Image 1: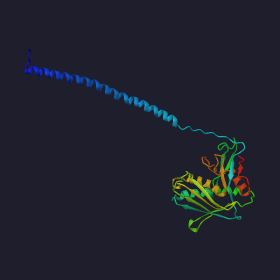
Image 2: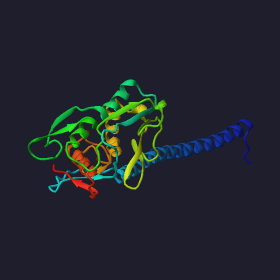
Image 3: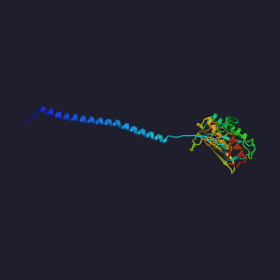
Image 4: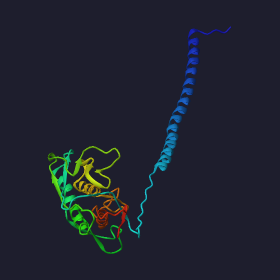
Length: 276
């Protein structure tokens, strides 16, 4: 019979326990290494998948833009609406309602787009009107309508405008400057009261007027006042009366003037073909 003393038994028990602990530690270390390796691999794989998805999404949503210009040999068309029916010499009164509290300088820019008689000569090739020559453009409607009035017409083309204080009552033409934004994205909007064939009163609303520069306010007023006089939109993208004003020279063209003359002469045509 073999027996063990207490110290021997304790030593044997200690070795057994230590052996188990050592074994567990080795297993734990191996497991830990595997987990660490897995944690390193997963983000790497995920980043590859995520990056691949980003590239794929960007390629699908990438906007593709293009532009082209066609010079129409037949000529662009400026469409017409209705004319005013005024006694000769009648002065159209204009009031400005400054709800946007724009500066005096901006108000002057608005008035000049109507009252100016200043002209500018622009090379025809710049505005796709031909390979040579130039054309005269008007910076204000007073100069343009005086040019149009040199042609005998059935109806009187208004050539005189007067700006009046809005407190004096409702004018023939009202220009409303508002800081509000149009829900359809318009910068300017013209409405008119008409009878069957003629304009009786008109109103222009310019939206977010407080955010527009003097040049922008002058441009949009010049465009909308064309509607007030009876012009609709032009098919020429470089013309002031195009539905989207994108030209660097937003002035009144000979085509706009010729169309105005034809409209006030009682033309039944809905649009006039431009000479250039």
